[in-house]
Image (tube, rainbow, N blue to C red; front, top):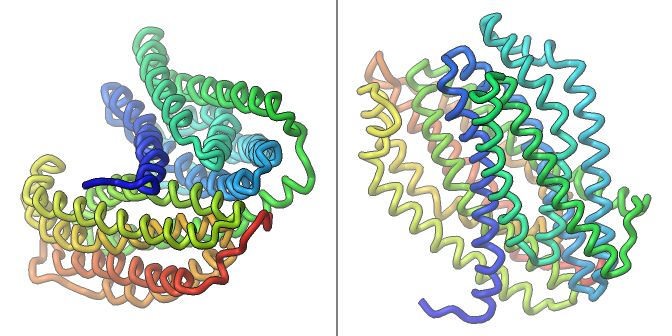
Length: 445
């Protein structure tokens, strides 16, 4: 398929963004693979600790999503020094949150771990891991904010290179510390925080050079911090609503039974991986729409959005086809339990059918984030949850024909999430996109 300059502009941002998105879960995958050879207790402790850390970091992704449109708008308006200063303000906010949350996390680690019904040995391992990991939180959040800044500057390649180098360093450090020095689970935590701070240091050097080159302000500005905090607070509500929806599906799957929960975990992991691929277009949308709004290119915004939606549907269709074709094979790779294998493939087929709709949602979500429309996303996020709740309740009431595995319940749960919840988001996002209220031209921030 031939592409025009707009397509190439989209791909120049989306493809490197995809690489960086995939690099992030590789940190956890590397830890898991290496700790997995230390025994079941160590692996379970890592699973518990990583759940706590990734949940917190997932909620704080707004540091990137808020910074990108702020920077892109100012860049589009021709104010590169102001764009860089806006990104630096976001990094200051990230560092402050990292310090505060790191201290709180360090002090409350035993209490947080105590909420999980783990054995004492697993709980102790998780506490040991988290006690070290909290020291890396400021660096991790600085990386997130700096990544958002560079995306706003229309640069997704640099975050990819830094993420790839960080992944390589993390793997080498973990091998040395876990096995070479015999530090075990704690060695995994130390290796990860060293890699995180090294990535943060590289970002700080690069941002510092940009600031010097363009005579941008490096000290935190009260106005910039306030703008980042206000924009981020709405996106935090939006992200929290998404997390609640995901956790709620897990709670319903748990109520269906142990095998059903195991099957849903596989479905959730697969959906998360597919979402990463589709999110690359959303990130391109954030950067491009923010830039064009700042530049006052009203007509270009509609054209860009339409093109992103088209590519989103095409990407969703390709992923749907691949997932559907592989649905009989994926269960064979993921589990040896015959009943779970038999239940997985029809649920995977249903998941595949929902991917084009999910792609539409992800793209428009990125477009509205790029437009700085966080307040609308926050309010509709709560509304979408309200629409999703009765569907979840109905799914929890569905019982299957087999006493050993509730396939009907799993299908109902996937339909509630993939069609009901994603459909509710598609409705609210689509209605907003059809109007012009979100297209505020200029540097409104």
